[in-house]
Image (cartoon, rainbow over all chains, first blue to last red; front, top):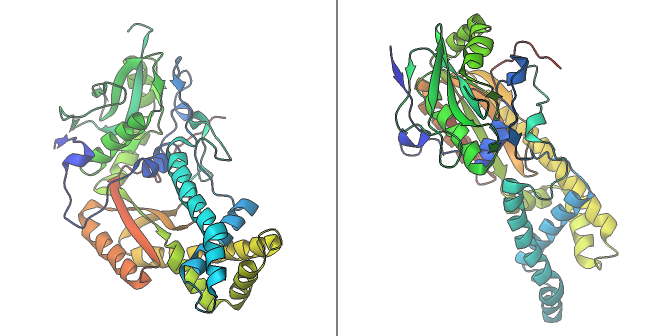
Length: 137
Length: 252
């Protein structure tokens, strides 16, 4: 039996099949899981430098809570309370709504970048030292 | 082998696996992928410069792509990203020969199977709308937040946010269980992963026969239909069995 290796993109699944892995999907996996070479060989590493890649860990905090509350606020504004008078709406739009919407967009953009580069994420870990909590499995 | 080069190791495969010419490795330009044989097994490797800095997005994707492309057609034991050894002799002797039987056994166990991932997030709007319609306390807090000025409503906002975080967590646990139950009979092993995003609904790795992939697709599409827009699950794979390879002995 002989088996060929081909790039993942080359083998087409049926349409509607699995989606391809994004960089974020890949990072969740290959930095955190797989065989760890220094468990097998004693003298292995040469002077290779790993660029710092951080794994994100979700930890609920007051910041998270405030962000969730803000999401509810956006929802409320989007649903346009029928009882609200015109002045209140105008007020909402000029202060709260416009501000919070902009922030929402910025947050989302920051999150995307963060997913790739992790410039300001808490809980940083170096790729060389990422260890799974389930490593013993 | 001169000391200014090193060997990057992607993973371990059965000895009868052959490389396709289009296979590309890490680095820029991509290093060619080579194969080191020892007994019944082999390692997929690239020769790289010893001062090569690893870890660009392209490096990560090259590592994953090579192994995942292999996983669809042959068993593969993936190394965690960043495995480097001094030279090909070290790969053949210290890695492959010293652990030969153990690797053969693991590869046999994977025969015909690959890892798949089921993951998805909640739709923020749908989730919150549903929560507000079902949870009296959430509705009341949301009213408080809306009426009071920002400074005065801080405590209410924190309480509302905490309530939402708890609701997501309990919904996540329930939906993860639903997914795992739905995979029963198809998956030979299941590994629920930690969430990596606050809106993560489900993040489950599973091992299954590659031939039964269409059954996985059916399960995921049925679960999506049942969720009615609340969450959208994706099926990823086949990928190398990162979640199911076991490091036999850990030092330090």
